[in-house]
Each structure stands twice: as C-alpha cells, then as structure tokens.
Image (cartoon, rainbow, N blue to C red; front, side, top):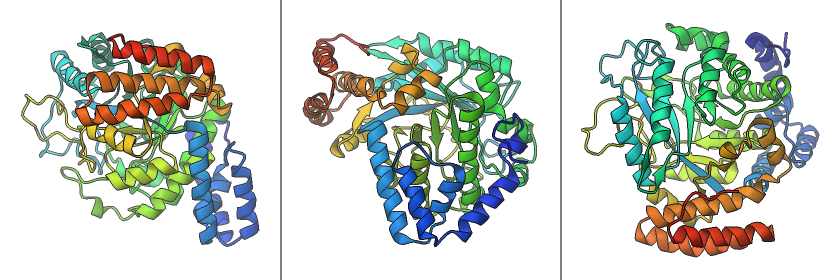
Amino acid sequence: MYNIMSPKAEEFINHEEILETLDEAKKNSKNRELQEQILEKGEKMEGLNHREAAVLLLSELDDIRKAYRELAIRIKKKYYGNRVVLFAPLYLSNYCVNGCVYCPYHHKNKHIDRVKLTQDEIRDEVIALQDLGHKRLALELGEDPVNNPIEYVLDSIKTIYSIKHKNGSIRRVNVNIAATTVENYRKLKEAEIGTYILFQETYHKEHYEELHPTGPKSNWAYHTEAMDRAMDGGIDDVGLGVLYGLNNYQYDFVGQLMHAEHLEAFKGVGPHTISVPRIRPADDIDPDEFENGVPDEIFEDIIALIRIAVPYTGMIISTRESQSMREKALELGISQISGGSKTSVGGYNEDKEEDNSAQFDTNDTRTLDEVIHWLLDLGYLPSFCTACYRAGRTGETFMKEVKSFHIADFCQPNAIMTLQEYLSDYAMPDTKEVGEEKIKQFLSQVERDDLRTKATEYVGRIRQGERDFRF
C-alpha cells in the first residue's frame, strides 16, 4: 500500500500507486477542464503532486503542452533568474563489483582499463581543474569495498580541499557514491561534503533487478532508501536522478516525483537537486539495445514538468547532452550544468596518456571557457558560487530561503563575484571582454541597494587581486 511517510521503499515508491497514477493520467489525456485546473495550481509556483504532473505529461492537447512549457520558463526565471551554476565531475576509480548491464564499469567488462587514482594523482587532477577555473566538483567512482572503501573517499576529499594552486581552490565537493550506511554518511557529512547524489537509475523494482543482476547494487530497497539514511546521517542536501532510457519514462517520471514528495514529507527537506541524464554510448554499451529511449521532445516535457512539480529544486544536466539540447533545457528548467567534463579516470591531466576508462561518451565536448562564453551570449550569469554551503544555508534553511524567493538576494551578487574571479584568472581574452561588459549589466540587476553597492566594491577588489568574497 502507498504510504508517503513509510521508511520502506516498497511503500513510498509503491508500484500499484504508479500504475494507478498512469492509468488515471491516460484516462484524462484529453480532459481539458482538469488539465487547466492543474495548470492554474502550477501558476502558484508551489508545485504539483505526482498525479497532477502525470496528467500533464500524458496530455494529448497541444495548447496545454505549450502552456506548461511556458509556465516552466516563468518558474525557472522566478526561482533561479538567469543564473547557471557550473561544476565538473571528477572520476577517482572505475573499479566496481556490480553487474549493471548499462554501465561499462560492470565487473565482467574486460575491455575497459581499470584505474584508481593515488592521492598524488588526485592532486594533479585537481590542479588541472583549478587551472580551468572550476570551484565545485562531483566525485564519481565505482562500488568496490576493497579498492574504493569509504576511507579512500574521505582521504580524497581531504586532499581536494587542501589544494590551493595560484588563485584556485575547490570550495565544495559533492559526492556521488554507492548507497551506504548511516555511519558512512555521517563520515561524509563530517568531511564537509556539499550534496550527496545518488541516481536511482529506474524506480521499477522488477526491471531494476534485471538491470542489476549481481553485486550490492542489486538490492533495490537498500538503494532506494539510501537518501533516508543519508539524512539520518546528517546530510541535509541530497540529489536524486534516474537514467532516462533504461525504463519506461512515464513510470520513472512518476517515481522520481514520489521520491521527492517522500523526502519532503518524511524528512522535512525535499531534494536539493534532481538530475535528468539519458543513456549514452560507452565501451561495451550500445544505447540502441535499450528499447525505452526518450525522444528530445518528450525529454523537454519531462524537464519542464519537473520544474513545475518541484519548483524549488536545482536541476542538473550534464555533457551527455548536446549543446542544442542543453540550451533548450536551460530555458525550461535546468539550473546547473557541467562544463569541460572528462568522464575518464585521470582525464584532466594532459600529461597523462588518455586511457580506456570513461563511463560514457560526452556529447558536448566544448571547453569550460567556450561554455562560459556561450552562456554569456545567451544572457545567462555563469556561477561558481558555493556560498550557501559554506554559510550553513543548507537543508531546511536553504529551502525556506528558496521557497520565499529570498535566496536570490544572495545568489545574484555571489554569482557575479565568482564570475569576476573566473574572468580575472582564467578566461580567454574574448570571453573576458564579453564577461566584463556583462558584469555591469548583472550588477544593475541586484535589487537590494546595500548588496549591489557592496558587490560592486567586491568586484573592484577582485580585479585588484583579492578573492573569495561572499554574502
């Protein structure tokens, strides 16, 4: 039976509830009155539940679909303005004991080079990332209790935070590691991670078990309940995600929203981020072998409706997607993107010969500077901000600020200052020229007089060589 307040995965991600939700949505696919009522509720920018969002996803009315896309654009602007947060993944190890059929890291794959970075090699990677201009990383590694124990992750985080190279520093490390224990989550919290990220891959239990035939990840309930344990361990910022294309997208869309609803109801804090990756080619993996591929137009609908249903959450899209898709996704709801990404272990160190260790092929292969220039040209404010994590504005505190729209008071000037750091230290001449002109415009958009005056002062001081100002 469906129970949003249950600690059991089978109850808060209830199979029968998802089927009933989709059945009702199909029955109402042409119900204009109901769909207009749902849109009217969405206009309040306070979210939709999974049943309401499913009705819009399955709508057969073209004007309704156009209307909810336009609503998503308005909600994105209201909550996140023109800011786009940038990050990079850092792959530490591709040793893995799981048998996931969609991932080249699966333990039976003999084609891929198995690589694990030493702390000295991590230092080289971090310096290379700092020299690009990155300030926040997402740690990635396979599940292997022998090669990748929690102690290795903790040592790596300590190494990353310790490195100060020229004007560079990594100010926040987000972590994407396998489902683990409350004790280990507590250790990650003590290591001062930012967001704990874990993709569900698919919420369909039977299909999940087929996709994960062996290894600890095959335990659907343990994996699905990981975010509850992370919060029990003190981590109040968590990030959800499914891998679209593995399973029927309608089912996973509903499951993803149910998971967000469960966290907010049961733990008091909804997801800090929701990611929307689609399956990509990789060594030993052919996406065409999976029959649930999601076309671009439907993918755009999914992004728009997640933005409407969970308006407060940060939404992430990676370099799995093309430049054109990322541009459309930014308009519809995405607020965070990766840039200049490498998905191989040790991929950022140019002195190291590229090995066969990538998790997936990137689609957007542009450099970080090219991505920054592109965002500026589109009118976005590229941000490397980590101020909320470091000021303690996380979890419930962060959500209150976001839902009241007060977070923008801090986000806009903080983003501007981190952009100025990038322009002063790392930008190519043409990007710097464009960015410096845009800074004037962005500063004029800071609504509070006191913050605008102070931010203008700090921007000037950054140009003179000072660093790391934040509100």
